[in-house]
Image 1: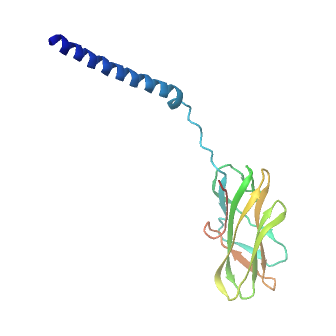
Image 2 (image 1 turned 180 degrees about the horizontal axis):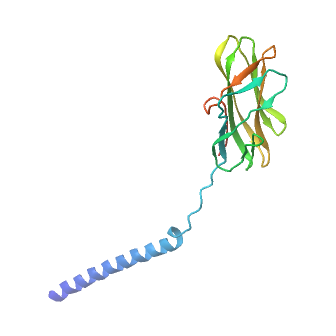
Image 3 (image 1 turned 60 degrees about the horizontal axis):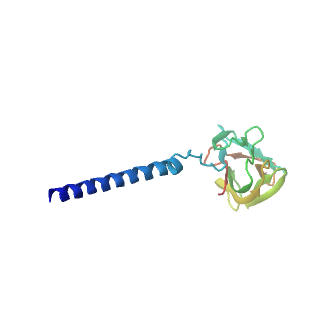
Amino acid sequence: MSKIKIGKGLAIITLLLGLIGSGTGGYLFAKEFFLDVEPQEEHILPKARVFYNGTPSFSKYSNTVAESLDFNQVSYDTHNAFDLTNDSYIIPEDGVYDIDAQYCVANAEDGDDYVIFIMLDTQRAAFKQVTCSATVSTLGVSISDKLNLTVGDTISIHIFVFTGVSEWRSVYGKEYATFFSIAKLA
């Protein structure tokens, strides 16, 4: 009887060692082919947000010419694609981009017209016009659009102020008031 017990004991030990060996071998196989793969960098989609930060706010003279907004601060820019000198974003990758922009005017008066443009290179890609229907201390003019863009395209934001007479309107210089943001959609 003791020989049978020893035989069974050896069989169990051999089985356990075999299972451990199989497990170790399986782990090493998986590690070699699946776990030791070099991690790949995650692709970061282009996005940027810039704003006008001025003290005092800059003034916009009423005229008939749309002018670019003067952005002078960068909140973030994942691809360093915003050109502060020319106030434009240079598209780093082909794709559809979500574009949002706004400017806020102080002391807008009844009948004033305010326009904001999204410019694609030198052409108007989108615009929005707001006519003030009452005298207000602050008026925000914003635009949002999605555009299919290609590498090298430039996007800028232009504004137009028409007061009916030649008057100045102040544009607020804070990030929440006067900004431009752009992000490539997945």
